[in-house]
Amino acid sequence: MSLSSYRMHRIYLAATMGYGLGSEDPEELAYYNKIRKEMDDMKMDSVKKGIPLNWDTPYGMDQ
Image (cartoon, rainbow, N blue to C red; front, side, top):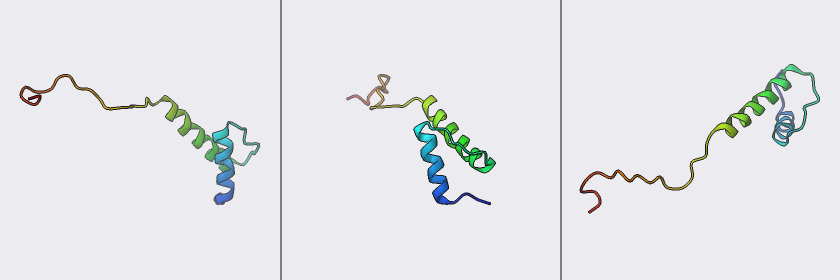
């Protein structure tokens, strides 16, 4: 049995808000853990902001 879109949304909200799931259904737990893992992975990635500065411009490009 697959999860309904309503139930997936409720699980997503619980995972993103940091709430516990409160369910023992293995399918719901798997989806909850998947969302939590994706969020943890995003926290570990560095965010690159701005324009990268490259001071090693080839000769002639700066003229």
